[in-house]
Length: 350
Image 1 (spheres, rainbow, N blue to C red):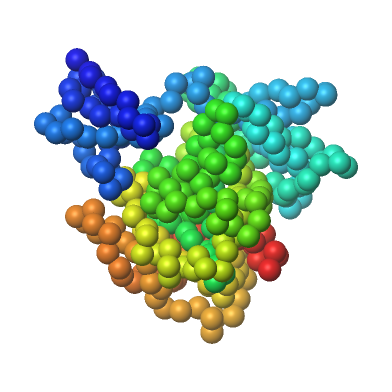
Image 2: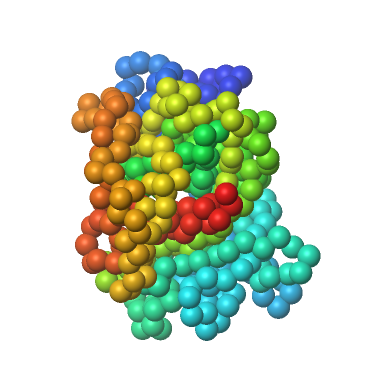
């Protein structure tokens, strides 16, 4: 038997929980840190982190022949919008409409953003025979979307998180805070909600110097290369830019960080010189810009989730951030390819 009580803040209290539901619920204590489920005490959980039924997913739709059509799992967005594109980047128009992320070719009266995929994009290389071998549940799942926030502090530092090691996709990889979009959310509300859930930071639009804006869109696939296995996930990740007012410095915000150990393994703030060094570590085959090595430190400061799931201050090797996805092996500790693209776009703003 399951007894639920709604509270004003949208949290639920679990008094009795059947074993069959344990698999689907992600619970958290009052301080928002997640722990394994226990039925012996009253716990609260974030209902938005429950397994989402298919009709709750926000999927990508492409404008074709004057109408928006659901994007197929195996479609390459860049190829669809810019056939024959040599550098893997094109311009597009992005909008969020209820349960759909709408992507269309450039239009003269619309704000354009860059859409990019890596040179090793699996869907750019898939053959008809390889598509036919995909499991039916994967081939027919459509294309998901997500929102990630390039959070710029008042003193010009960027917050990145390292995904927890136990996550199914991109474990141990550095990215901005972000995740899924819920139906009827705006892109900014989705991004800021995910930021709060992963880091504990509550950022509102009135803390920003201007409205949260779309910085770029990345076509993300997991695994990222065919040599690592058949594609299992396909997303259009909308990178947002939130620039905070001067009083919200990285130092003042760091003391408010309360990471979710179920989602995050570490987080750190990076100044402009460190961002440049990260971006210089190129993903292009045979083309790696080493940048100015004098600006690359051996270590950088971070907040880390230790083996006891406690948040502690520590230092990590900066060289790990410069690893790339070009090698056919696990490169945990690297910055994701899409994040480098978004950071490169951020560098052009200032």
